[in-house]
Image (cartoon, rainbow, N blue to C red; front, side, top):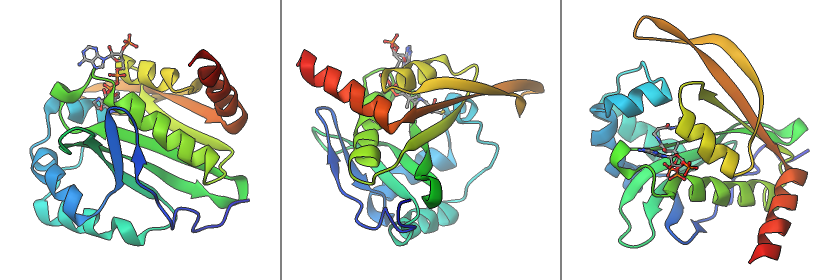
Length: 196
Ligand SMILES: CC(C)(COP(=O)(O)OP(=O)(O)OC[C@H]1O[C@@H](n2cnc3c(N)ncnc32)[C@H](O)[C@@H]1OP(=O)(O)O)[C@@H](O)C(=O)NCCC(=O)NCCS
């Protein structure tokens, strides 16, 4: 029940710590080196088996603005404008007003500062408040406890597990499924407003 190109007018989203700009060839260029030579911890936490070449990455970032059934953002530090990561609403299901969410910061040194959680809050405000989605869901590996904390802080609720879904370093790992619904998000926002 949302248009299939609902993300066509993708806005800049601004918070206290971060600014989210629609991802493109220009801001994406700041991510290329980190993705080619990915931090092994980030690689494991995101389950990234694939190895990327700079050409493939540049092409990927440059083509994001043409994709209106998904919305990719570069995450920038609000002060200074350094690109610290990316996040996206993907796998849009227009008939059911649903999408999936993914996020990563580019380096573990940038984690734990609240950047990712604020970025997720901004994307959810847009997803429910502007795009009119009913449900946003994500997948996170069971061993990625910090990411689960961040998502829970933004209102995601654990709803299930895919068993033995990731093979990493010779071991099988479960994937946790989380989601947040529009009504839940609206209630959280109202409570936050009341606290402020
Ligand atoms: C998941 C991620 C986006 C969360 O963003 P963030 O900016 O780190 O989020 P926050 O700073 O709000 O931290 C969330 C929680 O994790 C903890 N945390 C995050 N990074 C940490 C670190 N390096 N060391 C210790 N604790 C850490 C925080 O203390 C916080 O826990 P708390 O609720 O008990 O205080 C980010 O950590 C990240 O990109 N990690 C690497 C890749 C990844 O895991 N991507 C997600 C794949 S599903």
